[in-house]
Image 1: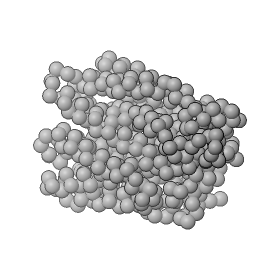
Image 2 (image 1 turned 90 degrees about the vertical axis):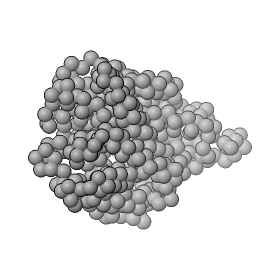
Image 3 (image 1 turned 135 degrees about the horizontal axis):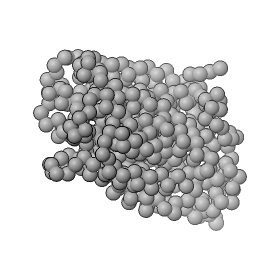
Image 4 (image 1 turned 90 degrees about the horizontal axis):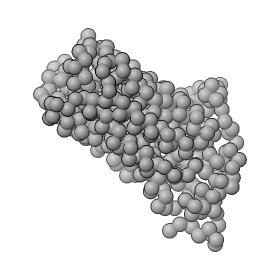
Length: 451
């Protein structure tokens, strides 16, 4: 039941009971990460056909795989900064229109340059959606739902990523259908999402920060059925450079570091999964990559269903880095691993890495105040995608020149570094309210760059 605004005392937004609008918002917001995952995933299933038709070498293959990730780097910075300045609502819809248009234009790709350019621009739109959508969701959700819903956006990303593999694999049985059709297919879910996002309200927390108290009150009354307002937070707007110089720089370093260490090997391995299985001489590598990718949902699903609140953010991050490292070590301990070792290693890594990725939207939204939340999330996302792009570009070169075993051991080293960073600096934020500093019962991330 929702509170009766005529007879009940005001209830803080963080403590409001869930209502239909929360459910609607969670589902619509999940559409963005679904499309993001689909757009970034479909290139992995189309890549073998692209390589054959365009006669790409290792460097060109890496460039095609990494182009969208480089775009995400730019889009995260741009989208977050604009969202903090102009509000969450305008770009929440407009960037999905870019998904549709750019997806359709991929059908006209005639060569490497145009393909890389369109993938880069799609990445810009995807990158902009990360800080916009996650900040928007975090600022509406009550405390007990924030972790599960934000990690649910990662689940939606993985569902979209897996769906792209399923669609691409199905289309691969029709030799007359080119890879261009595979890439264009992302316009379908994007068009549906564009229609669903029309008419959503502005974030009341952002409105309060802008001094638009009455507008914020109207949004809360109409959509949340309550008579409460968030307090104006003391932190005003900061530029990207000012955030780096502010007391929040430690939190930014921590979030960026663990996100980079998850994403650099993660995107490379997932994007090139079919290519990697082929390097391990696995028969029907395309089907194998589909199965491994589908199983990643087993990692993120329990996190979304409440494991993130049960374990807490800190323990979940530490544990998933440790298990991911074990999966990669299984792949790297033998120069010629048996098939069971190959699949066990990739599945163990993919499932645990997916579970840990559930924190990529949670930590940054809980560690930063409203005035700079989207900018900080965008910066951390951009830094992580720089690592992801480099990993995706360098992995094909690495296994071509040095073999698979050294590359898997290097990836395991990334997981070990993430484990150590998380053990030393990861805070616990599950009981904090938005705009409040995180719990000091664990080491504070501000100590990373203490002045």
